[in-house]
Length: 218
Image (cartoon, rainbow, N blue to C red; front, side, top):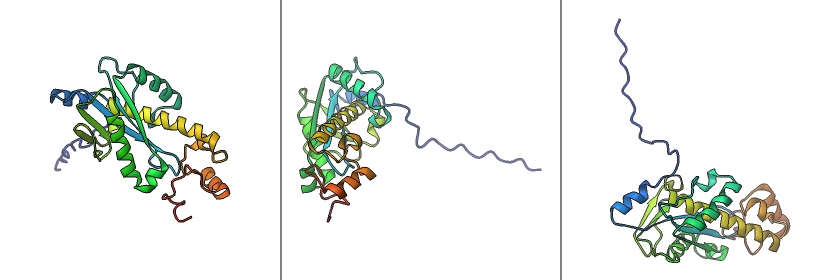
């Protein structure tokens, strides 16, 4: 009886990313590019509110423990890390793109423009910027590198994701008082059933993105 051949091992083409680290930043530092800014955004998908972007330059000797993709953290953990990032980072800058800017161009262009503004606004000029996603924003004051799933791979981008998310959530909570009835404090402008029902009842507010479905053509 012939022996069964053992199938060859399948190479790990897509390794599991357990947590972000500083390897991308360290690689750039070895290339002579330092300091490095991590850049990310919050709020590309909602029907209302701004896109908020953040640029963060971390101090490699004082990285807050527990940094991760903001979506993987509880609201309480994000708030705690937000304060630590502002306290320990070398520089932090936040910029946003309003619903009007989003409608005037499109959400991708508005997001990239806000990212570039955040990097340009840093109090310390970065030698390089690493940006979550597939696109490098035009108008950066330094070389840029796009990093797919960067908030899960880079501590600097993870820090930026937390700053952007917490800032936007606070903005939308404040908007809830100015535009009552939409529930912005609960859903932050995303297209939940309650939000869609409020739009049908109240009509769109000044914070809504009129080029987004189902608002477009409504």
